[in-house]
Image 1 (cartoon, one colour):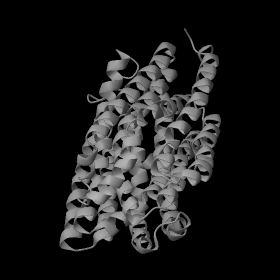
Image 2 (cartoon, helix red, strand yellow):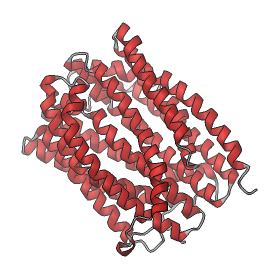
Image 3 (cartoon, rainbow, N blue to C red):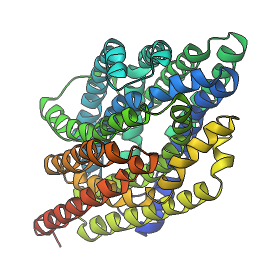
Image 4 (cartoon, rainbow, N blue to C red):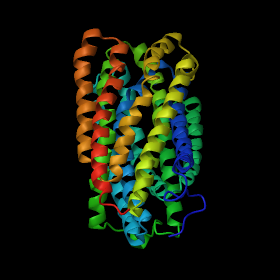
Length: 451
């Protein structure tokens, strides 16, 4: 198997430096995606009014619930392909790629149908304002038409990440994102489609990104390239992908599911507070997507080195990834705290909405970094195929605990600070258990690896 010229070697060289250069294109890809998503919010906020802004903002957690599941599935695909590729098993790599493509497409279609059919029920269940509901439902249904394409793009990105080539997805996402921004402006300003316009623009850009990355993989000569004649589901590989991918997908989806309950708490305030929090929530994407690049690096580096039997590089990959993710979130949080009003003014010019957004942003700015201990450790466990116990831990610490907090502490104080302080407490509880579980598992695993 030959390494691409644009690929980072995961099993050789200085780990800290390689993780950084591996992650930079992913960070840029993720931040570009965030910027393109922000363009939806910014365009409707400035050219369609606060009602359209609130409608799109009210869908954020529902959209995240399903997109997070696809991202989690991509992480599972990444782990399996990186392990086989690192071990030099060309046939297993090829079978995993083709099996994963079919599974990803099928899941994308299912999620598209589920999202379109359940949009009104879920948005109503979590207290979307009646005056925002119809527009929010329309946005979700149109956006979800692009879910099969999003599933294919995540599949392709996971394959390239697994073999160390993180630049190719960046290039494709840049092209698709530029189209997204231009279509946003055209549909909203020229066609006056407001909410419908930004949803259609997103779906079109997702289809474009998927077409680009799948076409690129079909042109690859290495064992991870797509061959139409080889498209079939290999039962053994399907079981491994679903075993890791579904657990990873549910792990990732648990967070937006829990956040739906948080959104219901936000919806208990007036429409101005809902709009302000929708604007401030864009900061979450900037920080989380930057950190997520290092989680992908953690899984890719650990999986390849695990497959190659290099146990010192395995644990060092985890520690370096944890350090990079914590440090990046700390710096970004500090910048957001210092420039909060300027950041929020990107999405709205209403002083009242900005003031409401700051009530959220000032708390979250100093909380983000601590999520690294939980999420990076989950990625590390996933690289060994350990998903069941981490998933249970996430359900208890980051879902059940949050619901209890909302029903008790938030219900008593009913303030924005009492709502958003739950994040750092839930992260602390979950990460403590995840770290203990990971190092206990690592002691057992390293004894089975060669010196």
